[in-house]
Length: 104
Length: 125
Image (cartoon, rainbow over the protein chains, first blue to last red):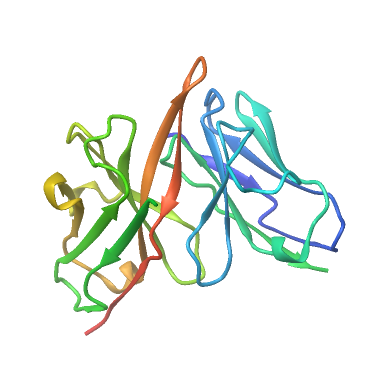
């Protein structure tokens, strides 16, 4: 099974900061990677799929990039509503362990 | 509008079998591009994918839980059912069902675009 490793596991940032979260696969995954945002008590919400395609309705400050084994989620200017936990997922199967974005 | 809704018991006893139902609307379980997965999340922990059923009735299971899981669907009722045997307190979690969608761009890619709100299951005697 392919393993997905996210880093960092948590981070503190301020409104307006640029935030980057990394997801590394144990082997190449050909851009079959999705990113989700989850707020406490809520179901995850799809942000990006196919590594870089923005889901309809998701703000353009979210972007994704990467290839092979290494992928990145970037929030260009953190907004108050972006404080949440973010997960990567390969192939609709394996999830990363999550990155909690907290207010500094 | 596409929706998924989980239902099942709130409380189960250790060693019992859990049966959860996901009722979908707005799409067909026979749509070739789509399938339905079950995912769980223990309190304060990460998401864990459990099982998936494809439109052609093929199934896929988490390697670590395969021996305890069975997924099935009733297309006419728009329902997907997950059973998990021999429940233990460590199985206490919120259980979600989600639609797995797919696309192709030189390679196939997959993602869960619509999720249910989840159902919380506690395992306790």
